[in-house]
Amino acid sequence: MPKCTHRPLANWPEVDWFKIQGLRHRIVQDYGNIDDVQIHRIANKYVPPLVEQLKKILEAGEA
Image (cartoon, rainbow, N blue to C red):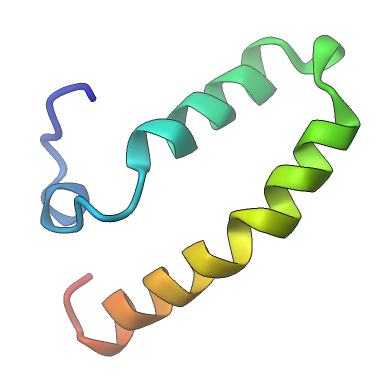
């Protein structure tokens, strides 16, 4: 993972920031070649647990 200089990101290593940033980069840079089925799978499998992690961070007032 690249050196994390943004404090909140460094505070929560359990959140896979590297993969989140990588997917964002791929969507932005290679939009025409995105596999819709893969994006749908990612959204259904990984986003709900991510939302729960982010809620915990926000509820703890750590963000």
